[in-house]
Image 1 (tube, one colour):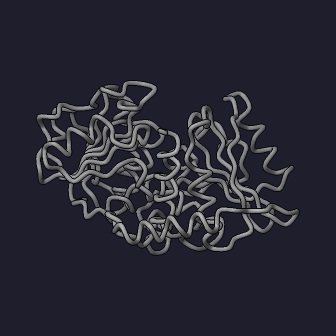
Image 2: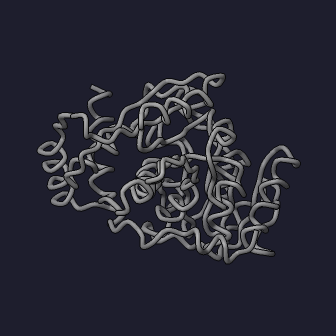
Length: 319
């Protein structure tokens, strides 16, 4: 796939929000979210939802509904627990029920592709879909905005994207590698399974020739920015585990962890302690959610408002 095709796939603009929200702006976002949170669906209300397993802890409904309400959109967003064997049936249900948009999370990002009418060039390259949009003619189109959401979050944080290490080689990693390569970064993929690592490298080089290489995990400390796309550090998996040796981190780096349960992972704690700039998984989640709404509605929402709504929900769940 040519780099020109991937550049054309980049979405307009970038969600405008400072990485560190001021307390005054946070409170304004919070008041707006509370004021606009009530939605009364009617027969004309457009429906969007996330499908995955599990989705019981998903913050996507809170994030999306806050943005819909703030913009006065007659949309409502829910969450559907869908078992792996029913992924294709969920796409059929989207057709039948007239659902306007879907967010697709694990383990369905690869499974839904065959059930769609078409997929975008990026989704085809990375072999994963995380967003489905219904076109005016009713056709269902799969996209992947995980990668561009990651780049958005890093760019807002002021990360140096000249050399970036990506730890992992799953669906999220493949999307991130492709987006970084298309953005112009020198990308270095580390994964314990050489074949999966080499596959991610191939995808990066398809996005931009010569942009991506495979490295040993011990070499990621040489990069300006480090991204963890593995589940290591996730609350329900291995909350105290780091995907790398913290001794390789230093204060000139930016570290992003795609995990957002917990919000501050063991990796981010270690990175912060060593003076790194840190970007949590919630920033990436909100950034890719904004890109999903761009596909569905043709406009970018306020990512700051989405983040505040998510933080409020997390605070409530911890009481």
